[in-house]
Image (cartoon, rainbow, N blue to C red; front, side, top):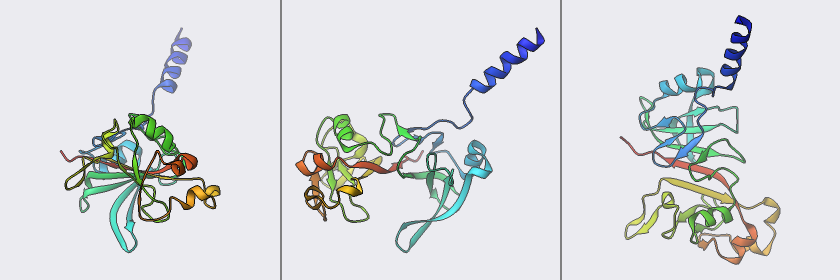
Length: 213
């Protein structure tokens, strides 16, 4: 009887979710357990000291900010936290997720590798994005009144309400195609253009904003 009880308890422990194993992104609110009340100390508590790394993160050439990386050595769980209060490393301002694939995904299913065609379907309307060929190329700029309001809306003073920035890029094998050449440069393009439909670029970067409390 005792042996059976121990076996049942062991199976329950193995089936239980690991602490911090929450990969859901709610733009504006949280990235898993990382919310507006989080701190670097809380990240250590959630993920373990071995999985939390202090860095000076380069946001653009020559400009670095204090940041904290969780799971720096695991590309499927890696996330860069930038702080509203960088001195105390409290109150996350934004969380950056970059790469080919990840466990992190939004409440609407957007993740690294999501094709532009899927983003268009989720939005229900064409998306506006920047041309390729620069550091900010392939940035989704506007949901154009669609369902993905977290992308922001174009107002009289620019984009407002943006809680999620998604950047997409096409397969490198397509860079010599006519379609790719038609999408290069500082211009705004529609997801419904023939070139974008042909390329169907995929998300390689998610920048999640977190509202202050």
